[in-house]
Length: 113
Image 1: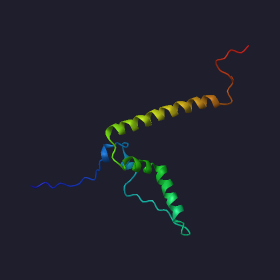
Image 2: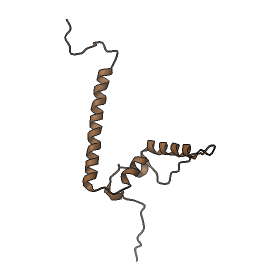
Image 3: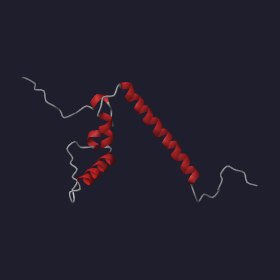
Image 4: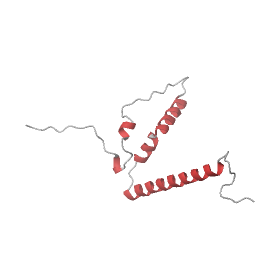
């Protein structure tokens, strides 16, 4: 019996860049996006399509996997992205604390005489 090799439909990410688990389920490869062109306004339709793809995160994926990156550059980018996310989370928490309203004690922790 001769075993035939067949393609299973799995595609590995280019250049060993791990995107996120379940990327193929989040963005079906053959799902179509239809943007209607009205009054021959191709630029407007193209801008709308770009906004749709950007909101889904597809442009970020395309830009990140367009060119080869050496492994140390990948590690550096991931580290920078993680540190930026941590910084932004910290700043958001601090700003929410400073801007909060309708609290019973206007200045918690301070002794007023």
